[in-house]
Amino acid sequence: MEQVLEIKNLCVVRTDGVKFFPVLNDIELSIYRGEMFCLVGESGSGKTTLALSIMRLLPKSFRILSGKIILCKKEITDTNENILRRLRGNLVSIIFQDPGAYLDPLFNVDKHLQESFHGKQEEFHELKIKTLKEVGLEPEILSSYPHQLSGGQQQRVLIAMALINNPSVIIADEPTTALDVLTTRQIIRLLDRIRAKYNPGMLFITHDLNLALDTGTRIGIMYRGYMVEVFRPQEGKPLHPYTRILMGYSDEKSSDILSNETPQHDRKTEKCVFFERCPEKEEAICARKIGFTWRNETTGIRCIKHERNSQV
Image (cartoon, rainbow, N blue to C red; front, side, top):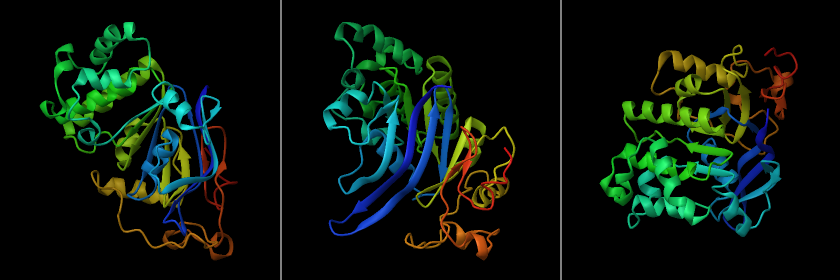
């Protein structure tokens, strides 16, 4: 398997100029070419911050404190902005959840695609037509402006912008949040066709565990800035207590499986991040921090009770 993205011990903080507030903690992640890696977590768990870290598009008040981001064997953690501009689109691209907020109202579709394209201009005309067809849009839409498009069409334009340079990694940050059920299914099928045809590694971010279970080749579970488990949905049951809770909720609530009621957690504590909420905790062994342990190349867990005795 060709690894197109690797993240090692990534820590991201937010600062007010005086203090640092941890946002991402010791994140471990790997994505391979051709897979659909679904990242699931409650609101505020750090999913979008992780996506922006990979793109190196963090807000000014955020900074990478430590760790490594390796994209197609190139470490980009400290890469300068001039080089990053060339890498974005060519090696990694992102599809945002609210296309209306990211499409310039003064640009038509043709201009959006032209701004995204990094190749030779003589190749652009043929490639933009081909890319539009790949995402289910006709060439006539090139002269249209964002306000003239439906939400589904706007999202397809963003997908075309992400696809036009044929990147090795495509990040989709909750791309179906603002869409109706039918359009959501169409967009999911479209992303799956793109993955099958062009073979990028896809990082699909969602709060919907049911969608992830139906779509992902692997699933990563985030909790309060930590990656707590990575598992394959087709190869046995997940092991982390938090993942089990989510799986239990999904049986009862198909549309709203993640609770917004998350207990306060002191990030300086030496306890496991899930200690207060864990139904399986044992004070003697769980009341301390535990790192993320890869059980093999593709699955791992952050739980001292399961890291050694787990079975895939």
